Length: 347
Image (tube, rainbow, N blue to C red; front, side, top):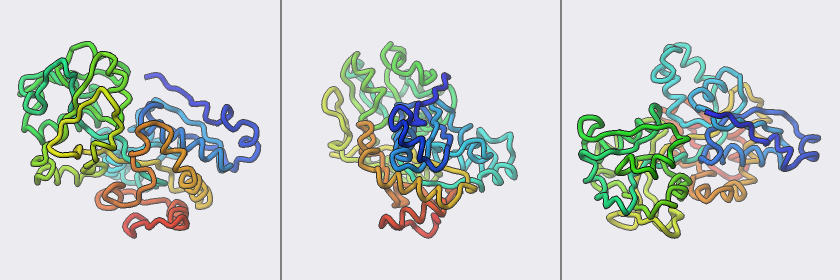
């Protein structure tokens, strides 16, 4: 994967004024610059520069599994983090199995949250020209469901299993390719349908729509309200999302198939994390810059307006519960001074 250093020491944006007056120099890591974590961190860096809090060098295109560990080890100051990753690290399992439980727990205790947002929502879609019938058509079909490994692939398989009871290999064929080839794979006909993380509207879908109109299928209400899915959403970083179709941001080229006017899906949530060693004043100033720039941040990309930036309700943040992290004390101060209520369990 190519690594790109965003010119977000913001020299190109706020150049002389910011460089001269910034309080601190910080490093940040995030995913693809067009993804929700990528746009979020880049917009955050711009806010920090605008409010003369920090010059932030943002490295995009990173594997967030590594970025989370880098912040925990003090190698980077800020990272975008799907909340399932600190949970896995705290237990020394999954991608952090080599750390072991004790080392993983110790590292996770070094992490704190500044703010949260919804990273994506898992969903099923297909070209209209494929005449795909939706979840009922997955049996014996070929489904592109993400990269060869990672959370997106796991979530895709879980969604299909929760709705249909079907398992990859046994009941349908999965196609996995890296994100850099995602749009090409969607367009080239190698899969009948796609189960992938999406934003509203989604950049991958928008690019792929040059090959034709598409239909997205909402989770059936019965599956969404069912006991299995409710248990599924108890795992860290996963929430139940029910969004009005009118707020999904699609103007043309996409049909949303639902039993009512809502789109239902499992959502992945996360946020910008820092090391607990970050000073109270820096964490507070950074969070204040974020809060003071919410309008600009929400306008950075079409999907940012409904990505839940500026939320503190644990139903949308997934703080507390099995999430091993809490807000940085400086962040708590900034949120509360801005009039937001932070749950005690998240402090």
